[in-house]
Image (tube, rainbow, N blue to C red; front, side, top):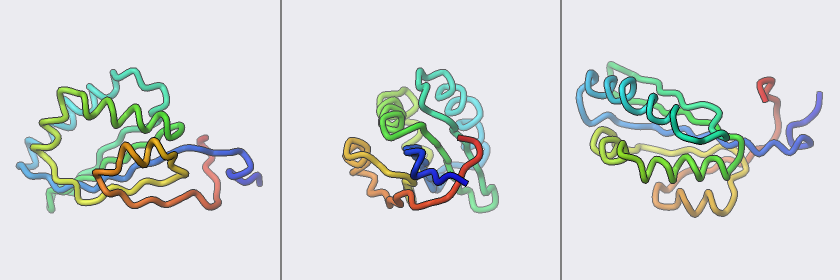
Length: 130
């Protein structure tokens, strides 16, 4: 066993809890037809995953994103804010909570300031996929 701290693991994870403001069909269409295809095509080599989860009964969503490091997370946020999907995203979802896992850098903290996220610094553990 080798601690991830020893390996200097700098990965960042976002857990974005969202309330869908439209019907479930419109939400699903946005995710499948716009959000995922558009984000997949972005030039973001440090984005490791971009996964949507839906609670169709409550019309809530979780967007789980993981990144190589804080710099990659900043790029993802900048690309979202400048993308043609940003307005549709804001119209379709209310951000209930943003949780940031990992040792966020000051530039990442500054970038996310208006979203008022909760931060959890890495403590200890292992991840066999890194």
